[in-house]
Length: 418
Ligand code: ADE
Image 1 (cartoon, rainbow, N blue to C red):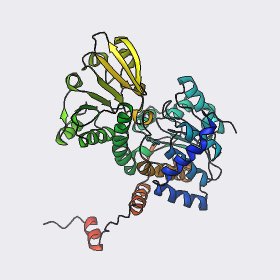
Image 2: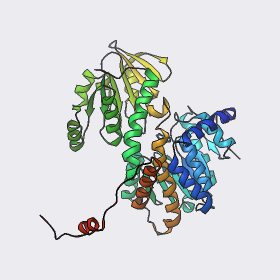
Image 3: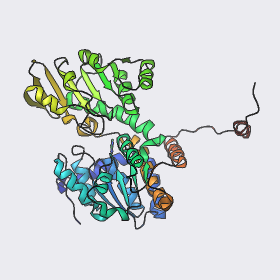
Image 4: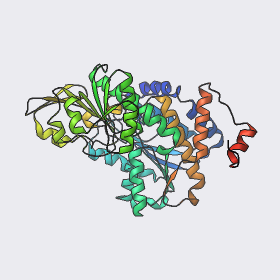
């Protein structure tokens, strides 16, 4: 079996951490148990391009239990947990192509390697496999029946491909399931981003001026959690409705041009490019901390930052200090890449449980229905969403009410009023 991981000797440590995460993934465990009996993915080859974490390892175990053959590469050069990569190779016999800190060339070479199994299904976190398949590896497209996509960023891109008529196989937008984005994007990104910020810097959040750029589900999570830790949170937005929501959720909202004068910590979560630009960087306060929790490392103008600096040095792990020509120091975390995965461990397993339950069930759905799907972006079936929510509630010991027959009739009717 071919693979490329940093150090196989880390495998036993990785296995313990994978098992630890597994305790917090009861929904996925339930699916894995059913998959082992029913084997709905028998004969299916899956190329997965995901963050190589303990949670992802549990997902791959479930897919293998279902009968799938799986290959894995990283969806970000800095997010790979090398011990997990090693354990997947040694204990689960998964060909993994991922090394933490790999350069851009290796990153893309690894995507190509994970495609060597000639997938029926692709599983993406940021649509990089899909891009490669639609670019250099069109030869593999005839064998692909469907794909899944985990992120908002990826789904946005895939919708553009669909609109332009260039998408060559159907995609299930896992991100858009309610049991994914309402929890993973909000509570997962909320907690793990602050976790990364704190692990990298050990700053006190209480009383600090924190600027959160973007008030989508991820931005909301980050802003709310930072506020909960006592920070004074400022939100910047371009969408008037989201800005209004942020105002009514109790945040100060202002343009970035104003926020740079007050902010001490800046967190970009927009999914867009060039959010913190030269003109902003130049006017920031001495000691400002900059980090990104959006999928790609394009939100902070890294080139601009480098060009403004007269001196650069690493001051602690994951923290690079840039001394600008105006004498002020700016601190960039994790090279502007996803701070929650590069400086911490990504979202906690309890929330990835739901995201990856959606992934596993979407793969099963795709295998069963792909022949009837067009080359479009499809939502996760409502029944899957409801099933994931019910299983999660059960695992938490939470019971809920159900509609009476009279309530059901009422909801179906339109005649009765006051
Ligand atoms: N994306 C965010 N957090 C993650 C995690 N823990 N594992 C895999 N993908 C993630």
